[in-house]
Amino acid sequence: MTTLRRRTLLALPALPGLARAQGLPRIGVLMSLAETDPEAAPRRAALVAGLAALGWKQGETLRLEIRWGDGRAERIAAEAAAMVASAPAVIVANGTPVALALRPLTRSIPVVCALVTDPIGNGMVESLARPGGNITGFTFIEPGLIAKWLGLLKEVAPGLTRAAVVYNPAFNPWYPRALAEIARAPQGLPVAVVETIVRTAEEIEARLPDLAQVPGTGLVIGPESFVLPRLPALAAAARAQGLPGVSVYPRFAEVGGLMAYGPDVPDIFRRAAGYVDRILRGASPATLPVQQPERFAFTLNQATATTLGLTLPPALLAAADRVID
Image: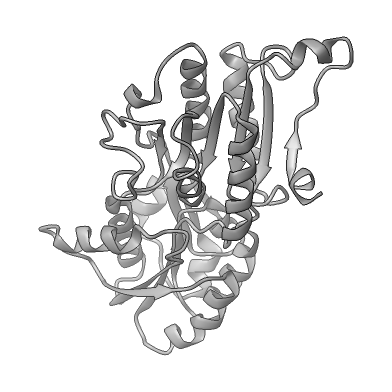
């Protein structure tokens, strides 16, 4: 069956331990991406390690069931419904699309979000300090980070006059609100924003030649789970079109994009394990504050900068966590 094929139930102990395991608290995890995506293993490992550090060992003190959304809205919706129907003790929701899919399905099962954006604007919580319902967790992107991306592009490519911010409104309906917020900020925007709505990674690639027709254009690739499998192709296409690009995903720079800046994703999953622990021990998600990222990673690709005819400023090179030659 499709549902069974798309979920990963981490190994349980053999009988007679299995009988005991069936009475253990069960944690559901719904990932927005595909199980085969390179981003999947570090996220899963960080969550498992975080739980283990708090005494929650798979097959000994809890059961962990992971489902995968494959970066597709319809798959995420189907897996969200199946997960709620299975009634786990807690659900870990990876990403805004997953949290949005779960929100109308349950008001009773605690949901710990990892990498959710604008939970107030999306109607998930009443406030960051006091969520007030069954959803809490850890955010990913906020408007200031978009402004940071634009500023980094301008610093690396001083001739930049506009940046195409690509997003899928079905996955990330918060983008217009975020862009409007940073546009209202006193300092304004370092470059003009071109809102570029796409629904597949292939569509982004198809739009790049048109974007490149206007000199002084850059590219911003934020949190889009359907983009993850095609980051190498997107990086290659941006480089071929002469578009300096920045992404929230370090892999974009690792596979040939110009740079990446964003939260440390495994760290967020480790912290999410702490909230799962607290809820299993009796805490209410309504009173656990939504927390923001604490650690960030900055990656630069020197070879791509050279290909694009750009000189990376010494200050940025010094600030980078990793420079790829």
